[in-house]
Length: 588
Image (cartoon, rainbow, N blue to C red; front, side, top):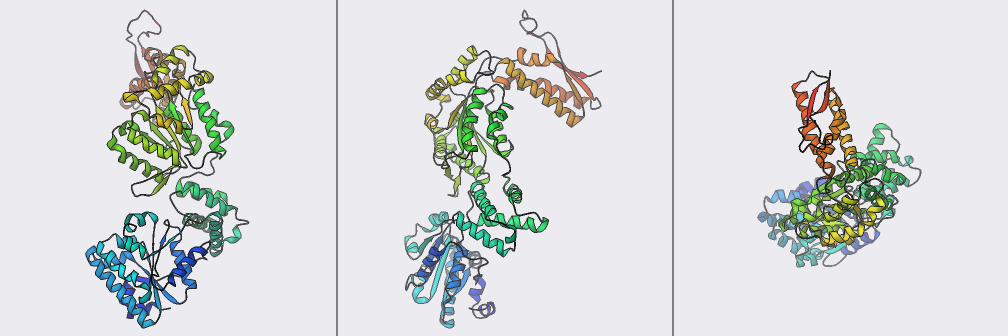
């Protein structure tokens, strides 16, 4: 084996553009088959070159290091494509740089009397630079056996197909060796070896924590490869253990995953309380919360189809009845928050066929960044049919390729589609369902009518029927009665009062007529009128805005009250038009 000083003095080009391959820091585990494939390739008399294909972090470099341990007949150098590109300056000069590099490698073989193996990771960087660079490397590969220079290239599947596969003469000079990610048993052995090298193996009584690391990284880091992602988590845990003395247990693993990924693995969904938790946030939608809770039991029990998203739902009903609110409640229930883990797409923005690429890019990017989330596709019937076909693939396979041809996993997502299609069914329900509490059974009877109506909607309100058969459940939302709207607005008023006190130290008294004014005088029982949303919007426009104006103009006041001035039409049925309005004054 040569020394660095000899390389610098006698072979300056090799010294500048490569380094002796580092020795292994850990034992090579579970790669016996691949190691034998590489060694056999090194012993071929003519085309003795290999290309290792596998995901980033899949152990390509470790494999070559493991081969070097057994292959004592040859010297191993790791070429640096980035330095080669910098030395060349541009693609046109790359061919000249490569020729000088390989000529010096051949001189090394002759002078030192030993064969040389050149390991080139990120091999595609050289090939994509220029056609001249590719042509310069082909003769070296073709004469590898006679010149005594073996090349082991490495890249990912994506880069191989994008930059290398189309050049058949180049591919024929490289023995393809695929590196599949290691399975659980192999990864556990690797982690045990790492723990021993870190001198923390006495912290583990068995392999339970190692298996949990594998399980959680598989679930929450689908875009990264084993064993790197498991090693990174163990490495992170070790850092905190050394700093704080924390035990290498599940609690520390939970802390590390929260810090690294924003995933709270300690958060647990109580299967017995799912419906109660959903009902606490969404009023008088018994049928909807029942349908949702029933399907969620499969995911909580881990009995759902592992080849598809965790669950998929169609929330159907007129506007303002709680579809978005229930989606937020779902994110809160499953992930502990309804902000970061809720990814919303307004499908009215993707009504044109030309928006397909934008939609695909945004969708895959957001799920690549956060693979465990609730995905809300609002007003799906407004999207282009071309766009909705992308969702068909997501619902069928749980995966989608992004702009970089990376496969993005949707297996940890919950899909919610919302639609206002079939609104005439809800108009009928609104006329006959005077009380919307405890009417889940009544709504279930409407489900077939709703499904049929959705399938037949036309023109600008057309639901993509092909999606229906791929969804786990249709979740019907019925129109809200005035009493339910009253509950919702009363809760919003209470929140506003609390917010004013916290932010401004101002106590607010709200007269009971304010609620009557917003619901009865300004409300609407029409199922298409916006449900509680219209009343909440009226509250913001007339009440919250008036409170804000008063606080801004009278910052010294610490007590204020909200009243209705004028006669309400709900109190006097003879009034054709009310002159009632909201007034905010100082409380005396």
